Length: 135
Image 1 (cartoon, rainbow, N blue to C red):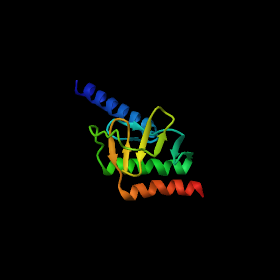
Image 2: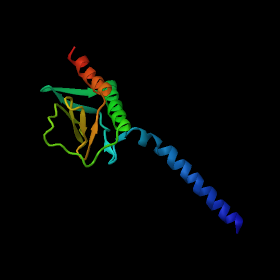
Image 3: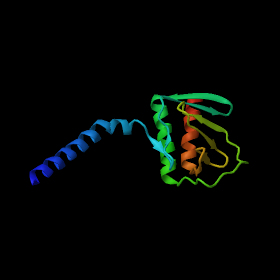
Image 4: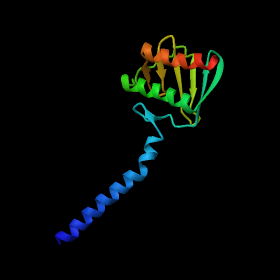
């Protein structure tokens, strides 16, 4: 009887290890930010800034996503705070059904279900990406 349970436990652990190893890249390739798992996984991000459209791909996209993830790790997403009077000058389209807005004046990121305050350092990093694209 003990052998039977031992074999079942062994097979269960083996199955768990195989499942985790085969799905590890799946979880890494789809970074999510915020409490509602706002998905930023897409090949490109279409951004409207100062009435100009930019497409971020490759390394620029990765750098921008890293900044967004960092913002949401530094500050908690406030799902109750909404300010309809905020003027958003940066519009983000992730081409996967998720959109977000940034107010550089208020230093605020609106994920659609809540807002996050953006530090001055992170706001400067975001603006730096666009300044680099314009040159």
